[in-house]
Image (cartoon, helix red, strand yellow):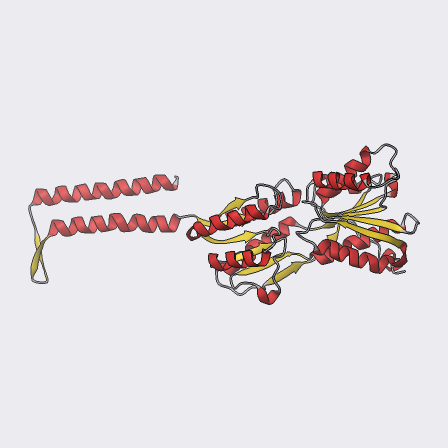
Length: 373
């Protein structure tokens, strides 16, 4: 039976009891009992008691059955496989705890203005929420806006996936972070790139990074580590940070790169895309170029979500997409829900918690050692 039906039956029962009591008192006449040296009609006490119970019990019932709400503010559309899997598992984990999730997405990908509007909406209705999850979008006054929101909300806020711009000792009292170590992920991508480029038996490799400024640690870790392990075999590393993690971004950015080249050759032997959707865009563009030497291009992606197009391409030895840094959205969702629930209960949690990503395809240990030249 539905909760609304139970509530309706409860109210009918109260009204029925009230009517029956009044009829009983009227049929028996007026009875009186002494209270504080005054006489109060017994029927009045019975009616007052029934009215009290009629108001008190439904209120208790409503409080106990009122749904608990948490918000989920994302910086990206759920069309991204990683983001789609993450939100799906977050909702499932909270449903298991009998908590409902109000999911909020931007009007356009990585739009900080949309996120600011959601913050204002949450604060306007904050009494309905017990806490929330936020994937922060980059904005000019990033730190101040996030701090202002957390302090005004004054309930637990857990940042996930993309780290907020706080050092561990700077987090507002009701906030924390959990996500994958993007700098370490960038280093892994560099190892994979180095391994694949060395198989080409060339030198003076030129590498392109197609990225976003939201998780800039990925490209920072990649560039730093690639320079360390490739040493004199690199002729240059260029970075484009205007991507928004969509396949279309990968196509457009790579098209702009090709237009700037005078020769018809593909200018970069290595391309690191900081998510798989942008990598798929680059792959599709290379495949559309007539007589392109795609076997001479190495593409490394980021996410490696199970059972996606990316995994099938990596398994195909003829594709330019050779590897991807793997993050597990299911594990991140479970850990995020567990951490937020602890915060809601008032338990102490680690302010900043970073999980270790891995490469989808492992690099042989001997090959790792040979990369140090």
